[in-house]
Length: 258
Image (cartoon, rainbow, N blue to C red; front, top):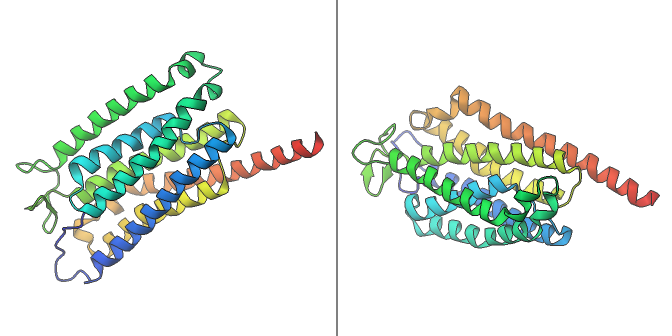
């Protein structure tokens, strides 16, 4: 997304290189995050990523890989994530019932519920993408932004809002999940750190950089809804790691006393 942009002359020539660097750091960090999640989930015999968010992410990767990504590198990253995500899906289906003893109907049917969520998210995201990049009437068309050789449709902004909403949902649900569970199963400092760096680099830093060097094409980054959502996921993630530390301390104390 944005790989084929044609920035105006006032934008530094390093725009694409720096953007790809930040996106690469984000992509690599999230790849590490997914691998760490699978390992921790298998160790603790539970699942890590909340079901609603996993369905959102899985569908986002499918839709953007098939419909939005234009260059091979982007499609390859989405493909790698989808393959690794299968490990997350496996641990959720295998161990999910243990985490839903308070709602056994969900636990028994967690695979079916997840499949329905993925289908709905695919439909919703596809509908948004089709509406956004409609070549005859794109949403907020911009000079220098290209999609399939047509100037105007801005997949960079499309990616921003969809990924930002997914991130806020993920951070809020991770925080809610650890509060409800009351244990650190499926969680680790390494997972938190990798996903925090991934989102900070591939979302916050990347888009703030784009706004600073090419403000007329990325003014949405400085909008009030954007600032609210960017701050929300960061605050939720900070609250999460504080709570994770407290739970781990309590768990260590219980082991020592037993």
